[in-house]
Image 1 (cartoon, rainbow, N blue to C red):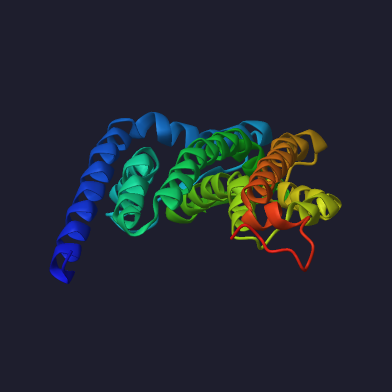
Image 2: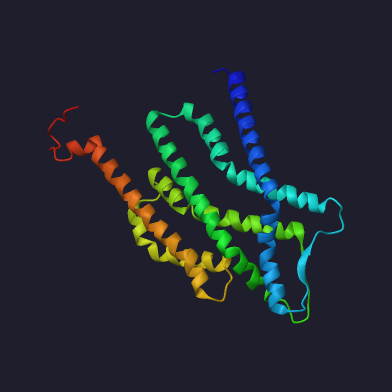
Length: 259
């Protein structure tokens, strides 16, 4: 393909991705009310617990703030729902430059990444109310909590994305192993360090006094860690089996190889 043809293909794939995000954003726009109710639920729970305390959301002094918040929520939902489409468009643009084996590997990573990312987002949906409740519990007695709408929304979206990316840990580990950067023996030897880092991350993103919330996130992440170790071990075993030098390992230095 010429350079112009590459640019035309890139334009078409960007157009398909944009249309997919726009169509999925319509779904977010239509279901804005229940989504906003879910986002407001942690604040309402804190307000009910405190009684007369003022805990609410503030749309600021701008007339366009309510519209901006609804548009941002709709776009965030659209990007999440359309992620299989636009991620595939990125892969499809790169696939022609890969070998058949690299194409199979890339397809495997693509298929594994999507369900893990959505599983992380689902875990975030469960953990957000607890995180908000704990963070607001540090408010002094008699003080009000008026959250800026856009800042509060950014916190929710970043929280969801952080959980989704955290669940991609096994994909990253297997990818590093495929590049021969992270061998299986290093994964097995460093499982205690990995467990500590997972627990610290879980405690940071789920600031709940109860240890059960932290363990609810750490347990699946640690399980995914060992799943990645198992997959990487299978890949290393296949690489050793397919290594042509292994057939000549028993030859004497003075004996000619079949090659």
